[in-house]
Amino acid sequence: MKVQYKPKRNLLETIFQVEILQGMALTLRKLFSPAITRQYPQEKPPMYPGFRGQHALVRDSLTNESKCVACMRCATVCPSRCIKISYHEDESHKRFVDSYTIEALRCVFCGFCVEVCPVGAITMTEVFEYATYNRDTTYFDKDLLLENWDRFMAGSGHDKTYVNPFWRPRGIPESSLPAQRRMNVPDDWTVEKQFVGKKATSSQQCLTATTAGGSH
Amino acid sequence: MQILTIVLQIAILLAIVLLHVAYATYFERKIIGHMQVRLGPMMVGYHGLLQPIADGIKSFFKEDIVPEQADRPLFLFAPVICLVTMLTSLAVIPFAKGWVLADINIGLLFIFAMSSLASYGVILAGWASNSKYTFLGGLRSMAQVISYELPLGLSLVGVMMLSGSLNLTTIVDSQGSSFSSMYLFPQLIGFFVFFVAMLAETNRVPFDLPEAETELVSGYITEYSGMRYALFFMAEYIGMMVMSSIGTICFLGGWNGPFEVPFFPPFWFILKVYGFLFLFIWIRATLPRYRYDQLMALGWKLLLPLALLNIFLTGLFKILVH
Image 1 (tube, rainbow over the protein chains, first blue to last red):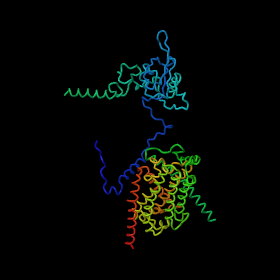
Image 2: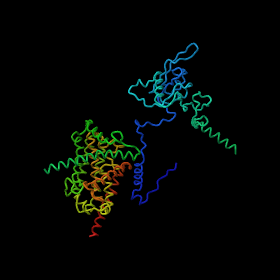
Image 3: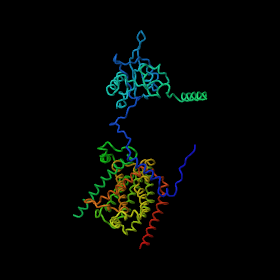
């Protein structure tokens, strides 16, 4: 590493303390520049697609119930193990969800559960202001999760097809995604241009290098 | 009757100065905020205008904690020393022609005496709190006062030589009312030394070693709380104003300005003091704190010789002219 030292000040610069004056000029300039502060409670931050807020279970408009099929994928993938599901099966091995709970205080908001859900039952809303004085209210059971969805639908501008296209398992081709996930996403989120770890990019670079070398 | 008028004048002066102190804190927070691309206080009142009043009420009603191991009488008395000495020096400052509580002949000397006494408050606070941080803050304050009192006094010797008086009104009068006759120009070196020593004397950035937050928690006021803490704060701001006033009187021609303002003669004086206060805040928003040995080196190796040089040049100039 090459260390770049500042050039030594000459006598005139030392006498007039040019660096101090430069610093003062900078602060004076900044005095008249607009502040970047966001006055939070009055002024909400902008929401970007892919925001991982409060959890909700999507209420199916046909059955008026949750879409969950108790496949247990979300509970399995959850790194903080905050999802607990219990279910029973009937004779035809159809599963019925008895209870579905998310402990929001344990959740790390990684969004894996949403990515992995095959039916788009669980989702994360754009609600982030649900701080409370009571621990019990952060322990979402199925009814509360459905309520979260209703409240989000009523409060935000989204319609019932709110499925975030960004929550998709990475590296899986478009065709093998569930139907709701096959939506238009920005270029760098498509399978071809997705950034999937260092290995993937370096192998891709190797590939392009060899093809470039071969063409010569 | 005369005593009554003087008491009334003191009360008015005190009210105005304390209001200024309150709003100087607001001004400082706003200016520094905007310089750091923030907004500063915004919540209390329109753009936080009532913030200083809210702060005042809060600190007034807060619990006044005295540490168990502290030297109780000294601990309680130290902030009073700080504030009283600073307020006392306000008495001799002429805000306009005749607008002065005590027009004494040794005004400048009196202010030096008072500002040195104020540092006793700081040192005693540091000692009486019986805590390592406050003690270090007090020690630093002591060393700082000793090394900067000298250049501060010597830098004004040039002004005394030119005006031939220690009376502040006479110093202003001897500067005349024109722009070019301000002592700032013949005493440029003196002004520089005075300005740097003034920053150190009022414990402001970049010489705020006595209360260096990053090293000493809050320095000599670490153990204070509530109103006593506010007293130290008030003392600091009044000290800033007194020093700004001295700078205005001795170098910038006091209340003289481009034109007379009817009904309110101290207009230009106050404007210049505000300018100084802005400079204080501006420097605080820009400069980092000096290291302890750098502070000492600057005081003894640069400012003191410069002040002496200034005295020599002024004397030489006076001899050559006459």
